[in-house]
Length: 87
Length: 411
Picture: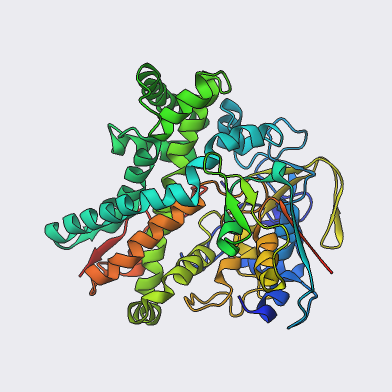
């Protein structure tokens, strides 16, 4: 997804090229409904438990190159399970 | 049901809801755009005089549906009943659709593992070959053909049985019973009777699976072994759950297949684009989901605390319907929103599968089936066309889920 489109649809204030230095991903596993959007957005950071489909965070501190993908996962997650903290 | 903007009949000068499609079968009721322009929230009146909120814009629908202070449970004070028939059906049997967390989470998680990417990968070759076989049959029988019966409905009915792991004995009966339960205009007694017949059937298949659960290689077998036998899921709850899967698993997808075919038949330029570049398929599926919005609005919600949203306050105990169809045509999000455009960059920003904890459980399966159909249909039938003028196609005006009643095609 293009950065400027995302900013338009999500209200995200980070400008083009304004990726943070570090990315921390948190999950609230108790909220997860197993929709699996996060795995589609970034399979290097998110996975699904094979039995119940619930999210597994495989990489809580991905490189800044993953920023766009994990932010998209945060936006797309229907149950507000994913939280991206950047600085 | 008296629908339409009939101000004189309400005490509050508010439009009645639901509304009718008065400007063509693929267009939304014109009031949706009007409400959305007025603001993100709109007060309307239901059949029983009850006043409820509609949410009309995408951002506010997203915010509201993911707000923890809303309830989808009919026992919550203020829960709005969409129709008299719905009063009966939602109260007669309870599934995770009409539960809130933590109960909702508990029941839903018994099924989330059935819709993982891995399970979908396992199902894909089976679904693909089902579509191939159905198209073989259609081509062998020759035109004209009712594509609704022969493909749009037949595929998801077959797939839901495949998913549950028990071949349905009588697909036609399943379709009839399901339709009677879902028809918004039907007599509540008819809905109840159809519900009871369906439950009796589901009860028999669960009983058989309990006697012989196998090794857990199918969904119902797993549910018996992992949930019913250890006592996590009562027999009654299992009954309602499987019943829900049967109807939710076929009716929505059937209608989306039918309307999706129609989208391409009335927009030949889009069909030519898809044929020229099969790489557009994935986005085309998202665009048909956005454009058709087969369920125009969410099921009932009620605020369990005051909620500030879109510059207004929804008070605790007030009923709300998220108008997903209006949100999917929100011009602040989708440029030229009333156009069916398979190259639309942000088509997947639609909320057709809803948002929040009740986000559609079966969406990966629906997408899988839609891909299987639209990957093949126009390749196998390059001259596919409507066999009657569009004006003669009949639509389901009274159903919670919108779609065609039949789709006569030729080639």
